Image (tube, rainbow, N blue to C red; front, side, top):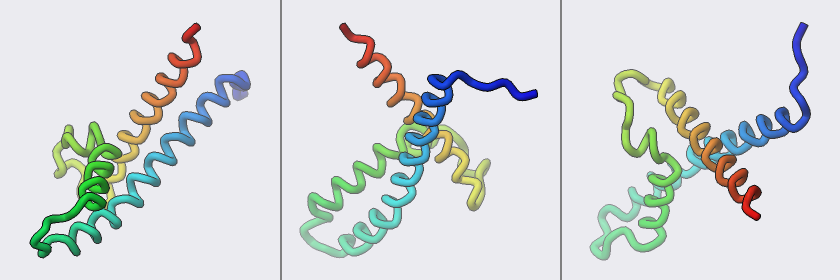
Length: 108
């Protein structure tokens, strides 16, 4: 027999998973855009420009800490297995955002 979670716990878990899913989707959508824009700006004498620079920094921010800092050997996750550390990275982000929201709400 399965036990039911209280509504508040279930709502928190669902919010946490929703944040992780949104982060994972954004971090996957930004990769092709960043690659395309940097490819077009490689031969330009003036450099990549502000939009490309901001996009690259946003990509690094979304992939921080696990992917940006490469806290795992790439050989452990060949091919499509790379999505596992990216999903773990999104769960870390969701946990941090939920923790910050909880701390913000407790302030008097």
